[in-house]
Image 1: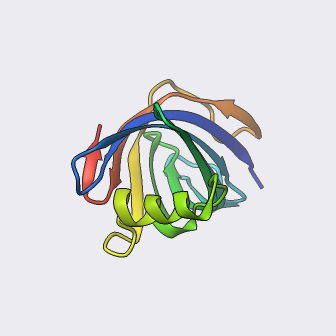
Image 2 (image 1 turned 60 degrees about the vertical axis):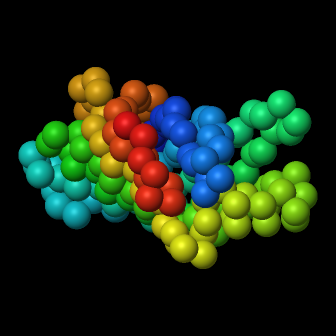
Length: 149
């Protein structure tokens, strides 16, 4: 069975209903324990154990949280991927009030229960070989129906 680990930095903007923007640095780790087919041009990896960590640095405070509920797929032949994450799965905030404000005012998790990111790994990489890879990717992140490419 092939296992591959991917780490990726993603830079994006997330807007609140008050039109404020928060700069995010997202670190994503995929662990792909399942391959749907034998090594072939159309192999697809599925992850049910991914992790997202983000940091938002603002003048008054830094917001940092993570979630281990990332779910995603990578198609090996063209290096495309897509993943989703429940917006209320983030933990590790500085305080319960900060978490409440994040869920209610910034990502509006009651209205938008999932966030997504889809795109393509930029450089060629042999995903069928066991190992850990650091890759660059380009795609579209969608939080509360606001997207950033």
